Length: 243
Ligand code: URA
Image 1 (cartoon, rainbow, N blue to C red):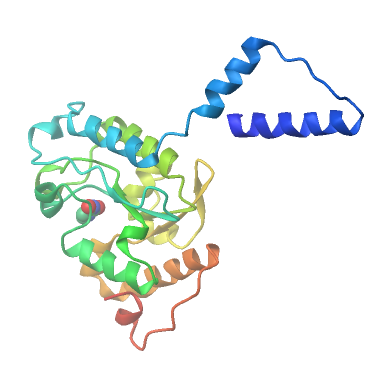
Image 2 (spheres, rainbow, N blue to C red):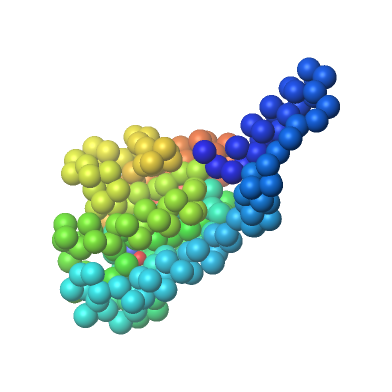
């Protein structure tokens, strides 16, 4: 139970006592001091907490990928987003810049986000892995299990209303499901109580443009879940999906 909940329960209890005619309540000095400590401590700024995680990621040597990386890629964006996008792992551009989804797949993701009526600064974008696997190969199970605690911490701080899992590896990493993304996409799932929408990875959409229509309908489901206005339908499926 959070201190806010405890204080709100306490206020309700005191109010009930007052309604019952109680005029005074005696409180010990220790209890007052304990409450004072909590009440006077502002909640830690999520931005600072995210920066601390990013600093730990930058020093991370838990898996062999640290020896081949140029930069770590912790993820970036709004520290209190409604939507968090989670991909697979940094590619070459991301490794060079230390930023998630800045290559070709990232450009497609940006267009999709804009088509949703949002900007990249309004959402948070991260990956299952924080370091680039050589030759962009799929993340290995050991790499994922060592890296995932960072992402879990980030999700707990960001507390988004919706997570969009981009591709099968993201769903596998977050939920342990190995079902193909074609079967999972478009169906609401849940990660630690947060609604999760699996959809195709933007790299796949670059290779198979005909799948963009499905991803766009998944994004419309996300906007609907958030009560946001739906963009007017595009004239082409490519346009509708931000292509
Ligand atoms: N693919 C990903 O999964 N993540 C990136 O950041 C870039 C490409």
